[in-house]
Image (cartoon, rainbow, N blue to C red; front, side, top):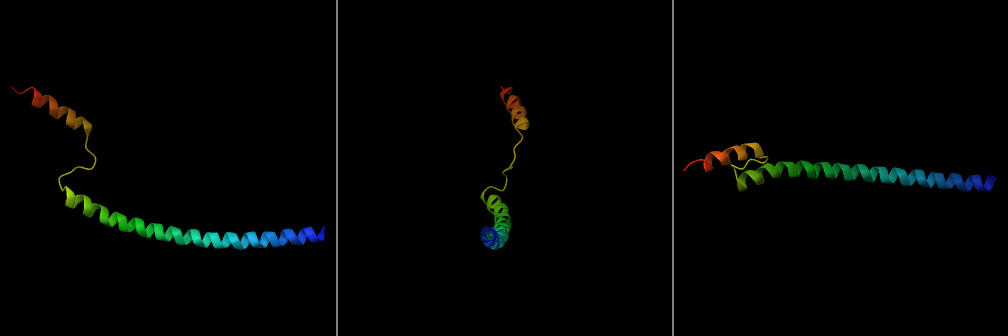
Amino acid sequence: MEKLNSELYLQNCYIIQENERLRKKAQQLNQENQALLAEMKEKLPKTSSSSNPNRDPSPDSSSISTRNPSRSSRP
């Protein structure tokens, strides 16, 4: 019984060490992800504004439908 307890204790220590290693790696990856996201957000407005400065990123479909009837009603 004591041998089994010792084996389980060693397995538990190994799992705790591995968990700590993975936690540190996850923190590092999260920091890298946040830095890349900030960089992407910086570049995104510059890219979209230089390609088409008059483009509305979220067009309102109701305003489009109200424009078309007025144009079609003209002779």
